[in-house]
Image (cartoon, rainbow, N blue to C red; front, side, top):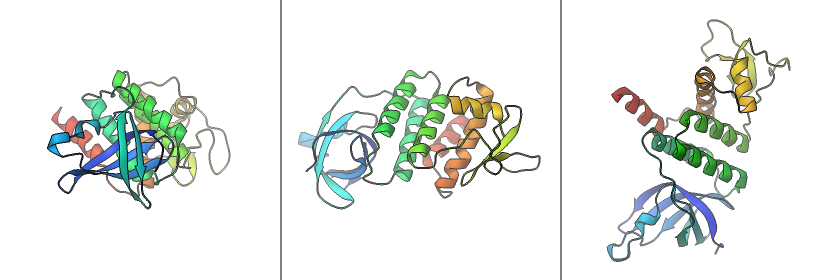
Length: 235
């Protein structure tokens, strides 16, 4: 049995009559799949404990991919995400469920996830919070973006030039007629330095990230992105 470790629930679903299947992200063990037995029983229901964005301390036992939860308790107040921030949180969680391998410790990514939740709760700039988290996630997965030079020539980026990002290679000069979205050297510099962002650079960086993440997802659709689309359609 493991010792208590900090975690967040990324996804949950009902299992049989009284249990839950949980996808969690833990500080010491990475992503873990758990079964929480009996937590939906009416007389002693603890289902409210297993909410998204609730910092928890948990322990489990077993072997293989699906382990059995033994202990769960709150660790800190829950992050409250509302409106668009809530959709952003769902997007981050879905990315992690689909991209993170099981049982690989990622304490730095755990801290980045907490920081993203803090930023989304503050609702200062949801787009900036997403872009910075996406950048950190790709780095921890081993897909870190090379943002300062062209991959074929090694030439440093020029803020006045336009580029596109090839996920399995790197940056190259954009040219008219190319289907990939263009990003300016100026916007690349903002992402590299993680400062100076404005609406134009955030818009271009969003398209870059969408292209790269789509590649690593193997083209699989994201339900959270479909929710974003529906929300904006209704607006």
